[in-house]
Length: 114
Length: 116
Image (cartoon, rainbow over all chains, first blue to last red; front, side, top):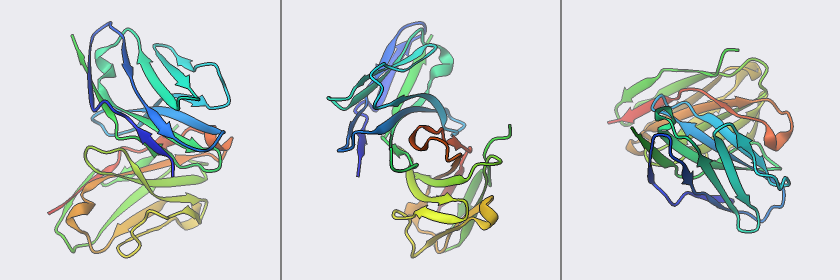
């Protein structure tokens, strides 16, 4: 089974600054998909950004971008110009090309200070 | 577009009691998932349905957990009897088959279960 590791239980960033959340994964597959989900206190998981493993270009969604290093099995999330509303738990997730279910890491709690 | 609906939002029961959770996925979504999220951890898949059929229930504790999805729409997840370690948030999600891996899963707000 694929494992997803988020080594930072907690991160803090000042408003308007940039923060990077780390994620590594273990897989023997060549085709797969990677996701970052945000979970605010409301508990609803919200998709932030996704990356297809066969694409070399890093995905970008407004202030959110990823650094995907396939050989290193690393998938970090960069949040630029952090806002108070970015405070939440962030989960990295892996999905096999063969299946639909997401395999999540343990999450990183992001605190944004004014 | 209406999102994934779950009820109840909160439930407190005593150990050895039974409990059921309900999920209504987004209209037209053939795939439905139940995840268990224990405090401080990421969600873990319990069961995945494709229409009426079970695709993956390898991590479902079948001696006490059961789930069904009648007519390929709503789903219920039941625990009988509950144990203290079942205290968690139970998340329901749905997705379209789409381009398998890339398709987005939409989540409900979950049910927080406390077993005392």
